[in-house]
Length: 103
Image (cartoon, rainbow, N blue to C red; front, side, top):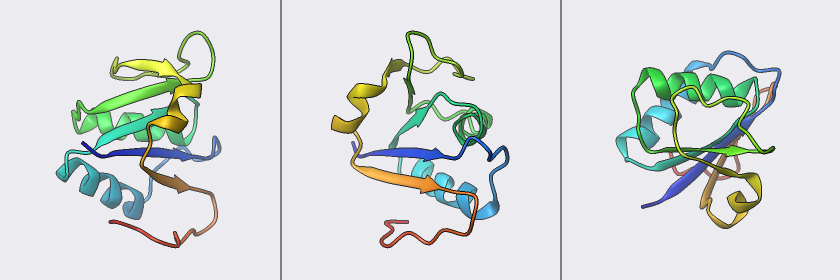
């Protein structure tokens, strides 16, 4: 199964329609979604995935214990992330157009 890592700024607390549309496409494709544990974008994406009751999620933690894991998904250390993710979706505060998108 393909995996995608989603990450963004800690200053982002709400997801716009374009981001939720892309996440919905990931859910439709039943991709494994990897997400960080930080406040901000990570927590907002976690909340959205939890609302959608999406089970194929893993949370990557930077410390010994996750700061945020809103749905109790499996957790792992952040150093393992770089060997797992096949696709990266990152969003920032200003408008962002990825150079190549599968969605």
